[in-house]
Amino acid sequence: MAEAVWSTDTGEAVYRSRDPVRNLRLRVHLQRITSSNFLHYQPAAQLGKDLIDLATFRPPPTASGHRPDEDEEEEVVIGWQEKLFSQFEVDLYQNEAACQSPLDHQYRQEILKLENSGGRKNRRIFTYTDSDRYTNLEEHCQKMTTAASEVPSFLVERMANVRRRRQDRRGMLGYKKYEHVLCTLKVDSNGVITVKPDFTSLKGPYRIETEGEKQELWKYTIDNVSSLAQPEEEEREQRVFKDLYGRHKEYLNSLVGTDFEMTVPGALRLFVNGEVVSAQGYEYDNLYVHFFVELPTSNWSSPAFQQLSGITQTCATKSLGMDKVAYFSYPFTFEASFLHEDESADALPEWPVLYCEVLSLDFWQRYRVEGYGAVVLPATPGSHTLTVSTWRPMELGTVAELRRFFIGGSLELEDISYVRIPGTFKGERLSRFGLRTETTGSVTFRLHCLQQSRAFMESSSLRKRMRSVLDRLEGFSQQSSIHSVLEAFRRARRRMQEARESLPQDLVGPSGATVS
Image (cartoon, rainbow, N blue to C red; front, side, top):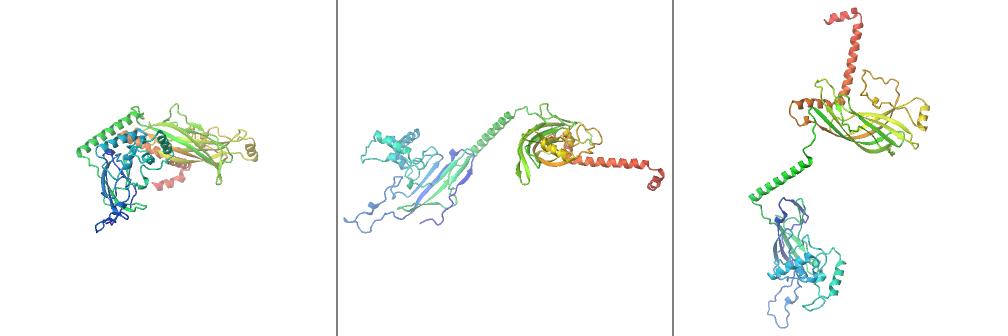
């Protein structure tokens, strides 16, 4: 009677285990259900001389070498990489001429031991291991004569080797048309176990329907029968893993070393890994960018070997929509340190500024200034993409533009920091009156900023004091604009007070009396 419920999910299942794979055990149970042409019939009447026994028409032996009327149920327990020989392999490796590799000779010795001890225990179920060669070796057990003691000649052996090398290596060991894969088991170095199909567990059994003249129906189940670890073994295993992880941590610490450089108390170290990504919107082709970082004169410093400037390669532009874009992808890096010395709360810390100058180069190696720009570096760590708008000084008249077009050259700034307020400027007012400029394109920078300070891990008063400074540093870009507004308000208030003092007393007296 066939099972009412079959498991049709033959996909693979993935498990993870920290136990050694040699402890894995699978139990496979195989049973025949029906047979459409299995002739096992005894007539009710006594067989006479003119009757032929139906047992004469029994089907030939299967690939495992057993008759169909033998036991139709088999169960084996298989371990990882455990070899169970098929009847074909037993017949094959008993012939010494078929053994071509050391593994073949090893299998031959094992099969001879099995024959001496009573033969193999399995009948239909056998295994392939990772070391087996999946080539068609069926010809090695074929005989050319009916003699029981046939010995192959030298020519036969050599021709068999030639034919074997020409065989398609996609073939399987044994008689492929009689073989059916019940289960495939894979294990990787990370402890991931892949089983196809999955363990039967509470699901129904899997089914196999043979094709050809002999159509049969089989069912089989796959169960995990690995023995559970004892509490003592689990505790010992946990100690081993703990010791292993501890040794690995010590190994990593040895790679880092004990000479990890720390900042001095009250200092902030800034690392910037940047990239000049592109420039777009400029008039001429073949662009290159000259850039440098200006550190504030107070409290900021950089190592003597540190280079704070750079020049990109010359890059031709390509059309992107209405603009022409030059892609540089030019990397740069620099390091700077900030030392907090002023403890007053009114002290306003400043942040480094990145200046850039875009130039173009023509066929005659003449260059033109395409634009100047500046941007304050981000005060927060992380990845940032900044787009810097640029402008260039210009002259009035057609002659200046003709000179720029034909012979190159144009007005240039002697000091690029004049784009903003120069760091060397000490006055109160910076006048740009009379400077004519023209808006040009833009330059895109990608910056990856890292910050290092003891204040990030200390829990003393120094951390609180340094944290207040860092907070002000992080808001410098906003504070700079607020500071300029407050300065303008103070100047306006001072002018109002001066104007009020210059007025006659009789004009301000009544209002003063009213106020009192």
